[in-house]
Image (cartoon, rainbow, N blue to C red; front, side, top):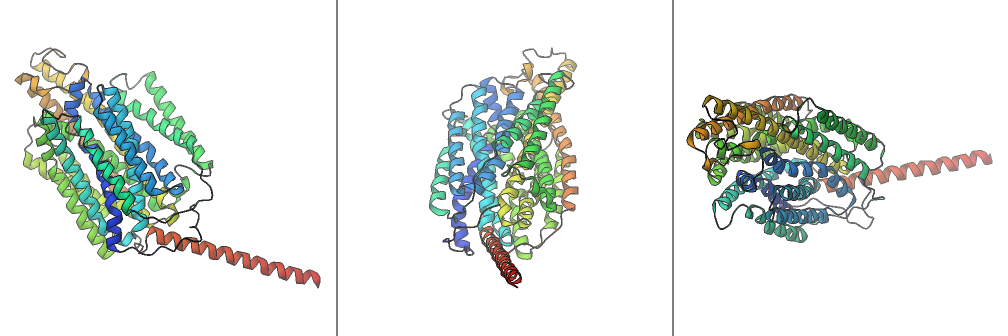
Length: 550
């Protein structure tokens, strides 16, 4: 629990729209950086992996490494936000991003590139957790939907600009893919300066600052063991093997130990008591499933555009516009309607339905799908995600005490990121296996030796399409088209389970006070209770003394 504010601190008052927008400027710049880190390399990855001579498994790990680091550190950043200055932590996370970006830009091997993505992921974990905690602290839930459009706009701009900028950089000979990492550095430095100038939060004093490092280590180690298993199984070793037994056994034991530690420590990284709240539990499960379906399904779309459809990195960035436009419009409209009416559950349910339909439609694509039809499918998916993802956080933040805002927000971010990491790892392994199977089948049918020069895919490497002869090129395009469609087919049941989960969330009226105001009210109420108890005790003591004298 967060201790009351210092006695000499002035009671927080409701912020005006102008003050909120000023405070959000640095926050949104930081979020833009985090989004840019993931999207700017999306269209460049096939070129990066081919240039470094890496494999399809390495392609997956370049994405998974950042997601894993972000997932593992989100709850730790959330805990730190309850103990230390939130603005300083935001600036520290941006500094981590700068270091990771510079390392990635100077990488000459896939090993250093993956390590640099881990450093970027640690920074992105801080931005993911802290940005939403700070927004909940300064904006009441009833007004939060109004600003969801701004958040959605930043998300859309970062997601659209990232692939476009990345594609242009890759296609520009005198720049190259390394600038995909360097370009985020000035934005990160700008965000640090804006946060220093515009973000003003009241100091929160805690009685004790204790971090559960053992619990954090057990959580990270357990999740890593399971993710390493799903990434390598079926490729480096068989699914039914001693390596599988060792990794899964170690992962399960470490996570069980983490639960044991978290249940007994004074300051857990993930407070288990928070799951007694039905809304938090259901929104957490839904966030996990959305992460699996959304991130796991869409992270390989850029590879599909370039390999299966034969588009350039720049064109591949433009092709993602329908999904981003759908997300921007739906999140903005839904946010405005929620702020106006105070009703939010219908948008969660509708978003889950539309997202499930979008994934189902994308499971029908292949190498011959027209861009018009593909655009409709992506727009449907974007509309569903826009109504669902951010409003899950709103529902949870609205139903917890102000002192638990950081814990509830970081838990949701943690499980959504975990879902994305699991989805990317599992679906990446499935994609690699299915592509290899389809290419072997196609090459054998065409009378071309598998794994030969014409295959261009020895040891599971991502093929350089410009070097392939036409018959092999068609086989590769078909293989990636079929495999990508399978990923969306597998992701669809996860979206359906998310729909069933949100149906059981109970709708409650949105609060009209911000986290800072609610925290002050709760602290004042606790003080009043303490005074009442103390006064009652004194009265009983005086009465007891009179009885003894009598």
